[in-house]
Image 1: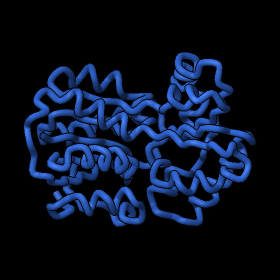
Image 2 (image 1 turned 180 degrees about the vertical axis):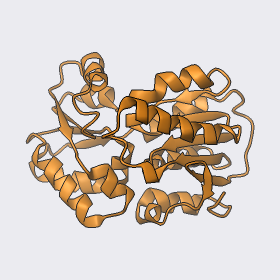
Image 3 (image 1 turned 60 degrees about the vertical axis):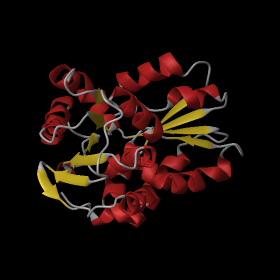
Image 4 (image 1 turned 30 degrees about the vertical axis):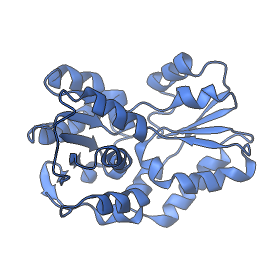
Length: 261
């Protein structure tokens, strides 16, 4: 079995680890274009073109399914990519985990990029899945880029700014950007002093991984646990910044083959 994941950068690590934990034999293809980051300020057309380039590079390796492990790309490009590549290649998008967060009953904050925050897409998800929960949208400018580059000071500053805009008593935080899952513990620590004692964080990696495996035509097909990394379609090594995060370290530890294409 071969599963491809695409993102602007290393935000795909969390979903990759989730897949590898469930199917340690799966061959993984990580296709990204970090030189083009950040995608948030770009137009929907630019995001779609960049995402399509990453998908084309991954599709050339004939995966059994492809995960759009990027909220921004899912917002702007998912419909276009599904039209082009399905049914031959199942395409799985990433949706913020608003429904399970709202189901807990307390106030919810959605941390997302400025481009996603306030978008018609996110407002629609809140309307459809937020129920009676008090939901606050919290923009996190610069956080994804700081995570991508492993810039510790910038990460701290961006998290602190977003935490200051998160209402006191928040019971659940939805991580509306896959990059944020890599610093979930730091987000929790920053918000905890003013949050509900029962604060929970909700990422998308596990749900996305499960959906990807459900979409594979032949789930009994085995792989060799290889990892292929593509940057703008060119074979590359797993970025050094990835190993700054537990997910990157876990992916390295769970991968038996060298971390290269």
